[in-house]
Amino acid sequence: MPRPFTTEDYTARMARATADAAAAGLSGLVVAPGPDLVYLCGYQPTAITERLTALLLTDGREPALIVPTLERPDAERATGTPGLRLLDWTDGESPYDTAVPLLDPAGRYGVSDNAWAMHLLGLQAALPGAGWTSLTEALPMLRAVKDTDELERLAAAGGAADAAYRGILEVRFAGRRETDVAADLSALLIQYGHSQVDFTVVGSGPNGANPHHEAGDRVIEAGDTVVLDFGGLKDGYGSDTTRTVHVGTDVPAEVRTVHDVVRQAQQTAFEAVRPGVTCQEIDRIARRVITEAGYGEYFIHRTGHGIGITTHEPPYLVEGEEQPLVPGMCFSIEPGVYLPGRFGVRIEDIVTVTDQGGRRFNNTPHELGTVS
Image (tube, rainbow, N blue to C red):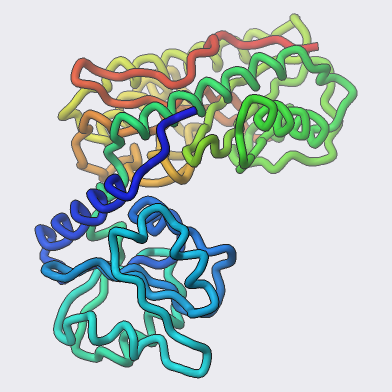
């Protein structure tokens, strides 16, 4: 089991976020329930409702968490709350009356992307002279660089996903529905320690040409190429891996060709990972391999996304993202080729940046797998 995060861990995160906000020209942060709140103070309400819950981080003030009175006991049990001031409000009162004294009327604040519009509008009405911006836009690196304990969790999640992949290779595909194989994948993820399964993409035959195909009732046939993309949360941190398999050993030449191109693109992009290289350069490198092979128009998504408390978060490996790679960043490298109406191929690993280059958290073979 990984070392539990402590009150001191969360206090340090809140202090760092407050300092980063000040360096970005912000008066502070307003953090709504969701991954940012979990990351910063370890609190996740039982249910996210219309009642305002907000962590207020402002330079020169003690961190404050505003919660509905009926949820205060749950908030008090969160590991990070001893390191902050806890304030509650009761139904019938305005929660903004509790928040406003803690905010600068002329300040500029970063607000969680997933904050309810009604709450942001309520704060705007109460503080008409204040400014508001997206937290992700203002502080895209807030959760991007992982510490040793986070890296340990991500590595374990990757290893569990690898075990699930090895297990699914032993399952029969032919004659079964995509949903049947997806259920097997989900069960394997839980078996190997995941507490939550976020997705199990099983794209068989022509469905594999849809990168985010939702497993359906299509019956998988011998001769199909199948894209398997799956992941979830283990010990609070995400897994996400993709491998492509073929049903039967008689693999068409074009499937082998496309798979080799994608495998080369994934490997070349991985080998380019090192501190200082920009996110967009990793995308360009993977895309160049696929384009030069003649399949560029069929690579229809970014090369990767960050991962941590959520399976998709900054940084994003995409054209226009000039953020340099930093040791401790974790992200997917997942090039793909999708031939409409025919088949798709994708290979995905989670990778972290080290001082020397890149380290994979997924280590199952990249060769085209075969299943029965």
